[in-house]
Image (cartoon, rainbow, N blue to C red):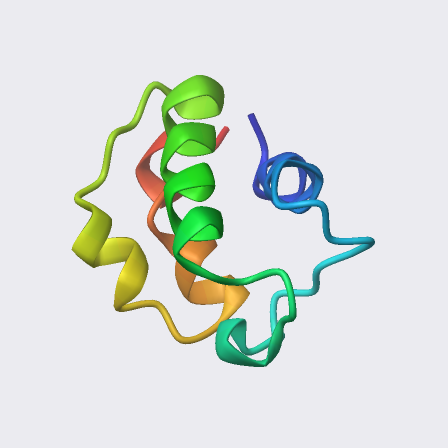
Length: 74
């Protein structure tokens, strides 16, 4: 999977119309504790990667979130 594909998967999973890497997670209406859990599940489904939830909570931007999957991208 490519980085852009994961971006689309996460956007769809949290029901965001679109996400951009420079978006600040705290500024997104869709970003809450449920979205954090949904992102975690999306990493598992899309990349077979199961990061610690705290790693997701520490992310400030969408780019930070995607960086978690760097080792798994094509």
